[in-house]
Image (cartoon, rainbow, N blue to C red; front, side, top):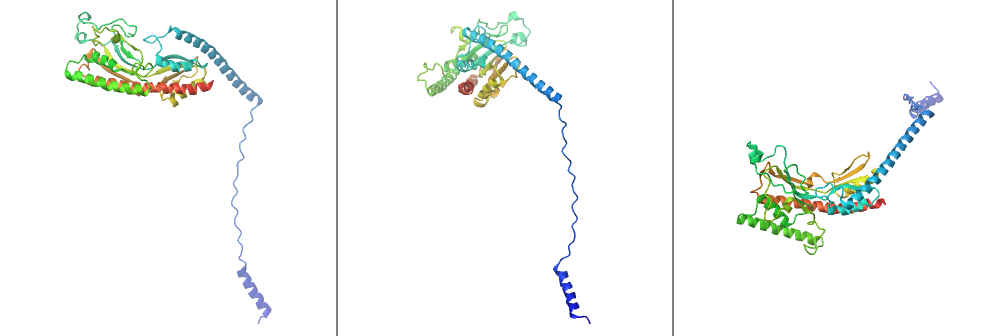
Length: 365
């Protein structure tokens, strides 16, 4: 028989076994080996000196090229400005700068970093050309050239056509006035011979006269005669205009005649790439001339300001001597209306470009 002390000791040991949980040692996770960063081999003093020397040489070359470009730019600019005074070297068909280009040209050419080299404010035109395979019906049937009544070839400084081609038959650097539209319609379709044709011409004239009056009033011009710098003003030239009223010019019996609307274009030589980028921002970002671009630096840095092709128009109306619109009077009126709408958009963009150039280029002073 055990003693009370021994029993208490057993109970105490039993209670202690429930109070303290046995501890089980946890296994330590395996340690990951971290690779030390690879040290780049230090460049030797000779390599660093060689790289610095190459950088200095490249910078010196660029500076020398810029100095040479500056010298040639100043010389070329003075030469162009002198020629602009007399139109001595103007290669355009009419031999002078378009009046509507002068505001933008004035802004650019008075700046030290720019000089305009070519420009056109935009034009609505009839152009006649004769290709190697173009000819009249008699020629295609095998008759000699002597049997064919040649197309009229009046002398004109606007010609620019090959051989017997008339070249620029009609050119207007601006929107067409109603009487100018009538001249084009009569050239392609003849004078009205029926009451219906006469009524069509009269109705179209009324519509375009009302539109012209609305635009002139919007521009702040009180009368048609006072619109000296508006959208409907611009140089009008060509053999169609020069032909006497008593013997109007007939449509050519050979070649192709196309009705064109060609938008504004300008090329500007820039002294530096920074100047070219500023002008490009004014043209593309501010004025919407999305087809503009800069030629990378060579001997010259050129910035071309051009619209996208969607603003232009080029429709053949006489093809190989066949006048396909002779009986399409309403169609010609529709084409002339479309050409005028495009020219109106062109005129607005020129004015926007003028404002943008004044801000972008004027801030470079």
